[in-house]
Image 1: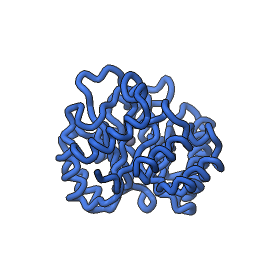
Image 2 (image 1 turned 90 degrees about the vertical axis):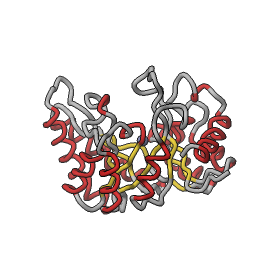
Image 3 (image 1 turned 30 degrees about the vertical axis):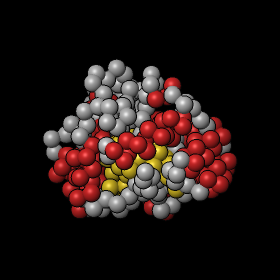
Image 4 (image 1 turned 120 degrees about the vertical axis):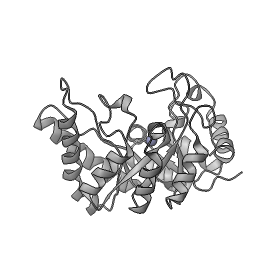
Length: 274
Ligand code: ZN
């Protein structure tokens, strides 16, 4: 079975393994690309994470995550900028191909989405010179609108691409099927992203019906209602040849299974469904 161009977002096995164990397991299964999270790196330390990735010989197709720009006051917004610059430095140390941005939602006690979205644009603009200097592309990931209040006020691919148009060089998008599958404008926006060479990542999982938890009930590919072959077709037509990254947060199911079973299933479904 093919594993080339397959990447595992390490959140998928976060309950089973630490970062070193996870990258070793991926390599054992022939999966030679990963996307770690900052807390996973912090848990064993940046230097040890860099060593583990080098030892296993895996590529780092993304680093999760920067963002969370909106804040109620200037000090909060500045703290976010400082933290994003650290995330960029860590991503560079890990040899990541991009830093994924979950941009943040409404500041505390605010109902002003327009203002939150302006804070996001201003925040990315403020860290972009540092990202460019580090040659670290920033992958804006639009999130499903159910997260607009607390995680990301960028909710469609079109909106993320408008931000890229505004901000320019060094920005792109991470397209996650979980967040964008419902969008009636998806095909046109993926084509637009491809034409502008802005697709920095392609994340897959499935949408379960019913979804029992807004955050931690993502499905394995093939177990839900997303037409993954159709989205794959759009992505390929857009000229994207990079990795496909499996990203599954699943507190009640996949996080409870042995890590090797999860990886085996990811490979099987990547081949049969995606
Ligand atoms: Zn994602």
